Each structure stands twice: as structure tokens, then as C-alpha cells.
View 1 (cartoon, rainbow, N blue to C red):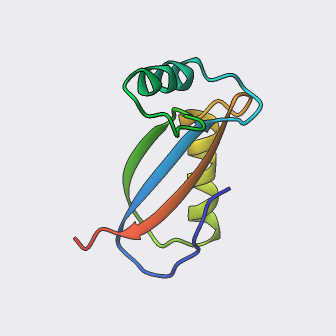
View 2 (view 1 turned 90 degrees about the vertical axis):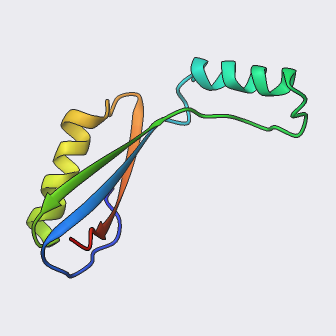
View 3 (view 1 turned 135 degrees about the vertical axis):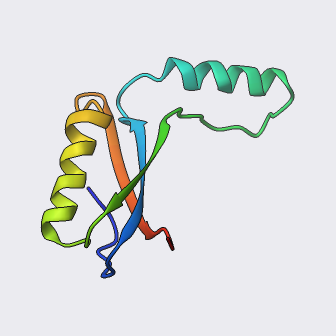
Length: 94
């Protein structure tokens, strides 16, 4: 489920976005939605809470690199039974 296949060499920043699957209840999101409504945000439709993880890696984003990032996301950073993930990549400029 990774994203952009870019070509550059050196340090890269991977931003991983982990969110509950659409069919999984999100009690944390429901609590935030309730609080926002209590604060007067009446146009709110839905809130889903997730997490953002930033990784800095060294390497060339090729097939093997992308596969290893997908493996880290799938096996360590998310629970694929109840969460989806996606990731974006950019050079760090270092």
C-alpha cells in the first residue's frame, strides 16, 4: 500500500499513516467527535483517530526498498486486522 515510487539516493523520510479500517469501531474518534460537538462544532460529520510515524532511512527507493517499508508497516507499525496504512516518501535534504 506504499505510495510514490521516486528515484533519488541518500537519506529519505518515510511518513506512515495508520488508521482504523472503515468497518472497525473507533471509540477514540467517537469521543473526539462528541467533545467537538459539545464545543459547538455542529457541522462535524465524522472523526477517525490514527497515528503518524516518521522514519528516516538511507537507501535508494527501488522495489526492494519499497517492499521492506511495506513489511515494516504491515508487521510492526500497524495491526492489519483492524488498521490500514499508507506511506509517503521524500528526500530529507541532508
